Length: 477
Image (tube, rainbow, N blue to C red; front, side, top):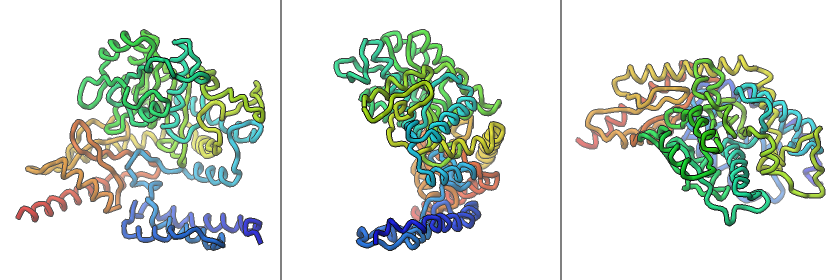
């Protein structure tokens, strides 16, 4: 008998996962973020492709057994690495609904339900961030895809300035697209430019110091020399959480007829609090804006969104396939696969819709402001600790600091400390290089994180740092 026709156990399998969820979620605050001792369990995922299969109940049970122990528990409150949020309860449940319904979310003809949910979610997001309601938008898998979407529209616009429809005819024969940014430009922007054929390494960086802060005069001179160009502003730099002066860059774009793209992967959420809204002044003057949902929105991977001032740019850039099996759009429907780079699209609007409806603007503002308080607490604890050094003021949710010790190679010491923290597993934070110094840069964006988690982070850093010093001293002796 065909095992896939054994359909009556689907509900039982979902019940097995649901039964495992309460214990796992309840233990998250106390679990090691990564338990190195459990990595031997990963061998259980391996082996030859089964010929006859092991059956659904046993396979799901094995996946749960391995995953709940050996996975990195990034949805917990002490994961401060890579700017990763958790999943709110409503978002997690909405994601289960997404898998249950398995909607084709790109075309109205396939799922008016999924299309409507995405349209509403995009409208709510624009309202949340203070973007004009008439902007176009599309949900994407990530901020990288959102940057790709906005920059693809920028490339289409730039081609028009040279009399070319890039979507139809490509970029062959055109000069190189000038892309201008500060030293805060993120690798995801470079990756998007690489995919678009504009070149990963062609970005003209104008920075006034070794932190990467924008050199507006340098940008102005470059724009005066290039003609039509793309100007990229960063809302939330990953090493220290700093922002480009978006409003001033919008002035430059208006003065020199440039396209302004804002990479707001997590920094766009500064708009939610009166304490930080000034950091994104001018974002509504941009031509395109990109952000992540699986960061500070706290919805499951994968989730991003792109917004474009001139809504028609999305369709011009990604639509017009001329495929006879695809019905043309009309004023009463929308096909999101013609507005972004994906064709086969998961209904990722459902967890966004569920979480925004569940907690509203006030709920998200409260979470953001609690995280701002926690970042200030971490900044205070660092400054009060004699063996820690704050490397940049905490503007948002990222705190950049390092462990110090007299007479030590601090870069080597902090690199070793970063590895020790990950192996220890009580907290999870990575290293970076900021202004030439190896440093820690925890990001506080998980809805579960509390003061106790911040205090533990400092305790672990100081404890492991002191231990590394003792080991080094013993080697010297």
